[in-house]
Length: 306
Image (cartoon, rainbow, N blue to C red; front, side, top):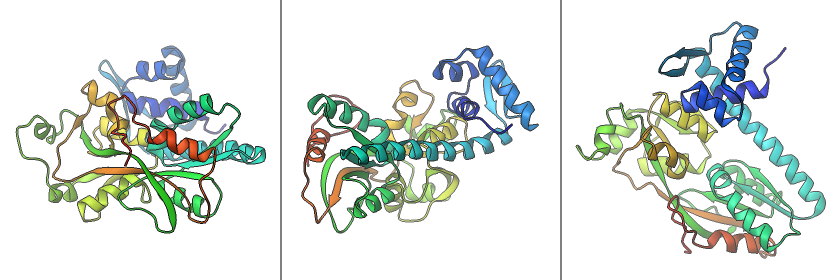
């Protein structure tokens, strides 16, 4: 019997929360059921994936390796599901959207809910890929509208800024850089960042492009993944400082499990809607861009009209 998706989801949740009980609650299953699922997975493959103790559950070296592959698989699965949805939307002739991971996870659901209230007959298909792939899909005409983040505007496309966000460098409270966050030292320099093994998104992502441009050098990589949750989980488990969108770690920052490290770099970036230069932006894509451009009353992102 091969790997099952739900067991992999559970292992990723243990990585993220550092506790089997918290992981079970996040997946709406009981702790005994979660424990049995993990034991079955370990027995099936002859691996010890999770080390349990009174203080919580930590992934073993094998568990970390499996999580790295599982995160990529979940990203591909999400892309498959979004692609099937997009294909269905194409058959109905409705709105096809491509969005980068941060926008798709933290902003697009709110935007699409507003669009549905304003245009209830519109069916949207969403493809979640990195910013480079969003641009390629817009250029190829595979989608009507794209949403990206990053420091540079792509050539040959119409675009409109719909807001901005900030990339954060985050660490566990026991990391030496947490001392900087308390105001006890100067911000971490570009040289220190370049010399440190970091947890990063994959090349082609808007987050990675923004960071590399600000750093002025190729970073030292401790872990690279296409999943924001995998990066956050890696930081929580001490793999290394993680470079992620601030909105992705707001809960961890609020509860103190991660610390936002001051750095001597400007890591703000614009969020943009992009569409083909040869086409006029039409409804319902124009309505979605208008919704995305409206200021929203929450502290996670600075969404202001350009």
